[in-house]
Amino acid sequence: MLECSKSRSAFARACRVIPGGVNSPARAFGAVGGEPLFIQRGEGQFLVDIDGNRLIDYVGSWGPHILGHGHSSVTTAIQQALARGTSFGAPTEAETELAEMIAEAVPSVEKVRMVNSGTEATMSAVRLARGFTGRDVIIKFAGCYHGHVDSLLVEAGSGALTHGVPSSPGVPQGCTADTLSLRFNDAGQLADTLRSRGDEIAAVILEPVVGNMGCVPPQPGFLEACRELCTQHGALLIFDEVMTGFRVAYGGAQSRYGVTPDLTTLGKIVGGGLPVGAYGGRADVMDSISPVGPVYQAGTLSGNPLATASGLATLRTLKESNPYDALEVATTRLVQGLSKAAMNADIPHQMTQVGSMFTLFFNPEPVVNYDVSSRNDTARFAKYFQGMLERGIYLPCSQFEANFVSACHTPADVDNTIAAAAEVFATLVDR
Image 1 (cartoon, rainbow, N blue to C red):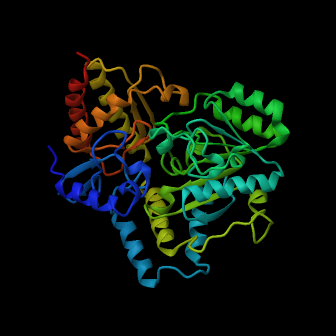
Image 2: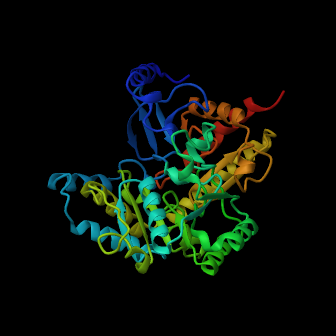
Image 3: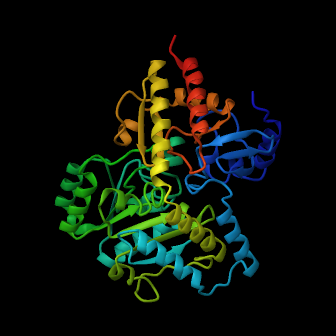
């Protein structure tokens, strides 16, 4: 049994002043039982909680720590930036350098605007799409999560799916009246919708690899159909690459799959673990943003020097070290080992993987969309989660989240994870 007395005390204290004791529902253990661990520090591929438990981490702060926790290049860059000041409310050269690196790496990006979160990035991209096209309707896909933007919090994934609230009170009906939610991986439904309402559609937004109903890859031809149909009907195609950007490939999912959207939203890795977001795309579209164009968007801390330094150090290290092939090999070995252990225990399951993202679904059906993912065996996942935690493996506390492998994970970590899973699977077999 893990020693958790200090975390239990910390959680009780937090609950007195923070709703639910957490500052994001994704951190709550409501879907898996028990109470969250309070983390003291990260060390490479490990987390250490305030009780001293050292855990192999497959959350990575929900994706940003592709280099592992506390990478020396990143922490040094942050320290150097801190010595110069925390915020100026004025331009810095580092912002331009980060924008140049993003534009060089991501095929769709000619110009980019920095913001402070993934939610802010998608909110701004949708506003820009509406302003540029002069149209109001947005198409999204059920199970894709684009932050807690009012107009996009419809059949959302991530915490909204985990907690059984695919939309939210407090979102007026009028905010979602111009949002259409379709089935992910269903190109025919998208074609039918655009055929009937194409002149109303400002944009189609999607996660090219979904990470918020678990890791759900696009089926062959789906992204290409999205691109072709948007072009045909004059709608903008927006890839939400907050999770996949610089994760599934250096240039994101769009470079991996060879499909170029009009706009891209980014976050997580481009800030190296500090709060950040960005959206970018075609120059003619981006030039509709104030102060050049009429679409207003602003942010006091946008391009924050600390976040910019952290992001630059992360992208430079990724570009120089190119860990992607090794990451994919390690992740594939882990995924194959977990699947073999589940099959040996006769546990119905599906494994999905794209690059260093993966999900073990407790589901006998291939998970290709929200309808299938909503039938996952969440009770069995909760037991799996707790069993892995007891064995020192820190996983996302939801069946509907992706797992992430970092460049710090070793073959021994993979072996230990597979061995732990085999032990847990043996306790999950139906008797």
